[in-house]
Image 1: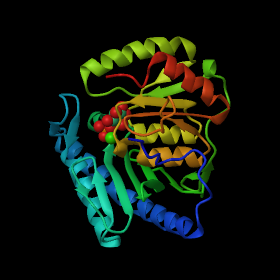
Image 2: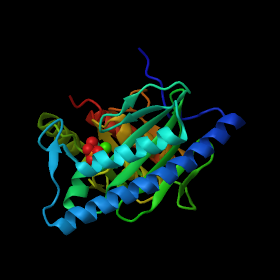
Image 3: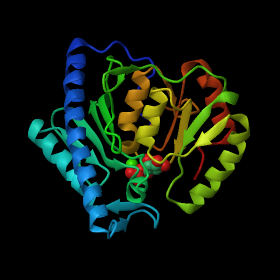
Image 4: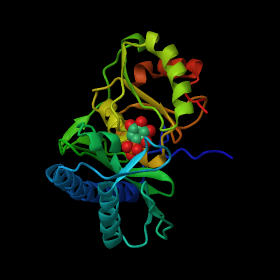
Length: 288
Ligand code: IPD
Ligand code: CA
């Protein structure tokens, strides 16, 4: 079975109706992400004011957390999308899974970086992407702590608020500051540690910030030189990948595969081939 690439590297110029739809859906994604950002901010303030911290539940392992705020954010986003665009498909991290009838499908991470959110570390986000017939055409990633938002519409560039983004500086692999992340499964993290031992001496240094959606936007904004992660889900990266692609960032799933769950890699175009080759040698995509 071949995997469809939701972010083709050399897309044909989108047709004008697709561009119009992409722009309309991107504006909707921004508006709803901002509303969800309010749900997330007020949820955090109430829990902190209450002094009891967050009641957390666990999902795939003891370190994979979910809070009532994640669920409230997803409920808000889904309600807004249903009202604005009845008939669209919906997929969310906290369980939403509805087939649609319009060809448009929304991919939602109500809080990406839940562990940071619980700990009060300021790197978590709301991530909303719209796909048309399997291709991501609109995206918004809202930084939950600062309120900054990153957005993109297919063919229309990548933006932080109203500032256009152009990807990372052009530095060789040895000078790259690289973002990554680790899964919630201990045996996979053990293997990821071995991959890291091979990668780390070949790059300038590493950051593990804790929200894959936001990390990809930092590559788009030139605040990270590159990013890779195994074990991500489509909702972690659907929006961030479009923002990165529209900023001119090169994307790969390694070994001829597209950048898509469960593995994505991203780097500035000038030195991406060398970075992706390093990741292939290290087996960064071969974790299980
Ligand atoms: C996680 C974050 C983290 C990444 C994990 C994701 P969550 O999402 O994106 O940076 O390393 O792979 O699962 O669980 O906070 O929504
Ligand atoms: Ca996530």
